[in-house]
Length: 217
Image (cartoon, rainbow, N blue to C red; front, side, top):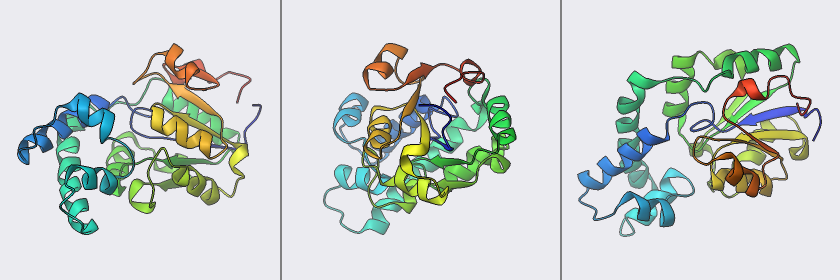
């Protein structure tokens, strides 16, 4: 793909390397609710889709979506408390975003995080002025790997899906972008470069410095 018209970024694991803190907050949630569930099992069988979709799997006896969201919100509060002292952008992020602004290329966020998490990261890293729009998990019905969130983000950018380039780090996120018809650059926080290429990414990066002067963008 050459010269995409718009860029769409996942947030967690893509703009920031924070997934360990999400893991710790999930484990704290299991303990708080006395769930006999280890993280590996959770990650394989429960950890996909929106926060409400995940909570519905963890608490099948609860059918009220607002109640499920509130339970999940407790986990997100724990995550923000854990990650607050450690917030740091992936290397080269700000200079890469500056470059894209100069090219007048619209940029959007497509994250399964809610508005509180988006605001948390945007404020800490001063990201507001870079992005045309944000789309969070609270704004879609179906979470990744469903393509809804990326299609919504493209619509907000007023750009055809096939003209958008996505930055993602997870298997479900990559699958969601591909299902939306969008090529993907993998960010190697969760997986190594080889795995990201096997998942169909155009290329894989450890930092945004690696892609800043690429003819791919």
